[in-house]
Length: 239
Image (cartoon, rainbow, N blue to C red; front, side, top):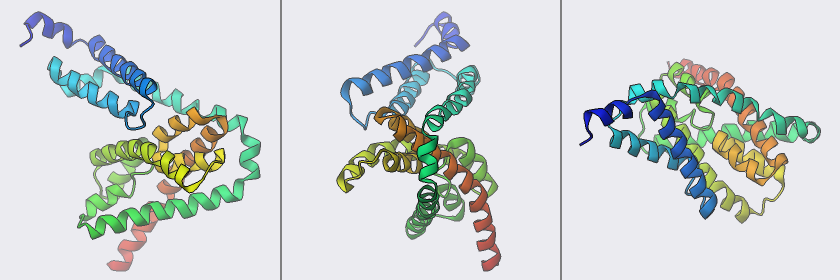
């Protein structure tokens, strides 16, 4: 058991921030040291933070409030993805129609196959509505799932798992399929593993990262616009 003095120190906001940063640095070091895709920094950081919260007996609500300054950095970090997009703007314009076709066909396939598989496994309607949003970024997925009658908290977990598993599975699948073009690989990362996949694409090069960021952003916008309309149409048909 921790003494009262240690508990007071452990429960300060700076301790929560230090825990988060230390967990990420350690997870990143471990990933770069081993090169194992299963040791994704996002996943390992989460596990280390959970262990730290339990060990230090922190209240999760207090921890969440303490690390708000770190969460603020998410916006500038996301905007920074525009840099590789700008550098490869000509390549994107040259491949605009193939990119749009890939987004529409791939995006529809992701949602349809997910819902079909979940339906066959007996998932109820709120879970289905939540699963439909799993392949877009968390700021879009959570309110979108809630709007369609899903569960925002579950959407956050599914988005994270999708990103981690997608980043682990996409590289060997692309290698197996013989896909080597940076643009194609980037689209696969962005559509199947959103932000985590885009971080992985950055490791492969500027062009790969540009198309991953494009796919992640465009698929998020298309999903936010088209999915609620599709759900509304489906409800009107079965009503």
